[in-house]
Amino acid sequence: MATPELSAWQRFVETFFRPDLLAEYSDDIALGMVVTCEVAVLVLVCGTALGLLLAYLRALRFRALNFLIVVFVDVMRALPPLVLILLFYFGLPSVGISLSSFVVLWLVLTLVLAAFAEEIFWAGMLSVRDGQWQAARSTGLGFNQTLVWVILPQAVRMTVPPLTNRAIAITKNTALGTVIGVGEILNQATTAQSFTGSATPLMMGAIAYVVLFVPVVMLGRWVETRFAWKRA
Amino acid sequence: MDLLVETFFNLAIMREALPLLLRGVLTTLALCAVVIPLGFAGGLVLAVLGTTRSRWKRFLLACWIDFFRAVPPLVLLIFVHSGLPFAGIELTAFAAVAVAFLLNNSAYYAEIVRAGIESIGRGQREAARSTGLTATQTLTWVVLPQAVRNVLPDLLSNTIEVVKLTSIASVVALPELLYAADMARSVTYNASPIVLAAGFYLLLLWPVVRLLSRLEHRIAG
Image 1 (cartoon, rainbow over the protein chains, first blue to last red):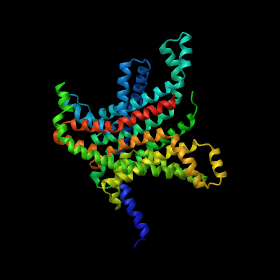
Image 2: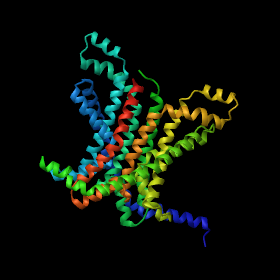
Image 3: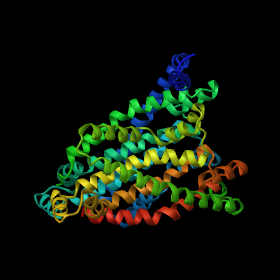
Image 4: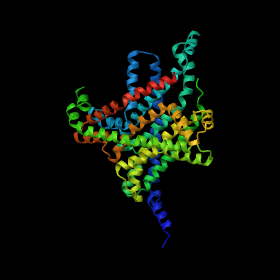
């Protein structure tokens, strides 16, 4: 008869780290990691670019356009991403637009990141003093030249910490894709869990996320201290 | 156009789903009333523990916080809800959500409060101590009130995120707003109930988002 401590430990291992399941499902989890990374990178690139574009359009100061941008940003900030995901995934096919679950996840997260990024870029641009605009324009630079060569380089510095943190938070929302069946990490893990009736695949999924995101969170922490309080 | 209205703004279906969704709103509000104070209190505790002089205690705390910031909340929730029963820990959906949210939200609130505490100069603490206040009194009456005020926009922003996050409770079948809406959708084969749910979320959060936006711009400008 083993000591009680040992059997409890064995039970823990048997529940969360069953060796045969670890081996059997490591490929599925790895596949999920690839899908998670694909969505994450696509969202980061497209969301940041769209956010910057929106901030640029806002700097043009057309009343009607600004109103639309502010409404878009507010709505995206106020709605839970999961609501948008369900809405796009189940609603759009009825009006003849069938998007794959992967595309829906990418599209929703891109729009959400774009909204937050627009706010952050815009706040950054506002933080650059008016004198900078006037000085740059009076040297003969055009509007676009001033924005690209004078304002943005100063604004972007300020936007790095909040944008990094927001990007990390939104990238983690890739896990929401499991609800509509995107084969990312969580989806692979819950599928395997229901097949095997064991918590081991869930633990594998959790570990996969930790492996992917702990370095990212630490990077965010570093960026925060690196750029702190050095406002233009 | 008719098809669009029929699909997303079907008033007949919305009216039918309304009672169910209103119950969902109440559950969402009840959930918020539990998880927001719990998460903030947890964050305060973590942030205060983080003021320790001991290097390795600070390191352990940072590990704890980074761990729970790295795991997506939905993963944590599913782990607590479907993983822990295998280890003999059975929680109701509500309790599972409360536990997962506490672990996740307290990490975020802690980081914000920590930034607030760091924004208070040493002089404040030294002055308070020299008037005869104890370390605990200094923290409670001098440092924390100013710290919280300095990071108010971030606290508000995080709280909006927490309210939005309650929608993931639908995944473990807790009948909050989104769950109710998705039920109605699957019964009626129509997306209008989800649009209605989106309307409720906007009603709840848009004013707060506006307020936050103004606070942020005032500070940036």
